[in-house]
Image (cartoon, rainbow, N blue to C red):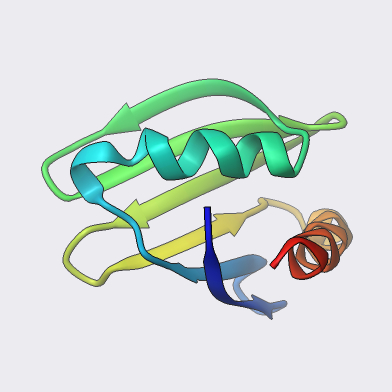
Length: 97
């Protein structure tokens, strides 16, 4: 798993990830990412052009999304008070780049 860049967006409560991701083999990216942030995969969903996984990180539920057509990948949380979890994960991922 090689990340090219990551960026936080407090407005959308998300952490964008730029990486070389193969839509057809998303799990080859998502599983190592989940392990790298020490998150447990709760649920996996996919459709014609999108993957959406639900992760658990120390009690916080995080959505891992990837949209094929936009080649966009991001982690997101629901509540404002959970954004600090994404900030922590961003620092963790930066150290592993």
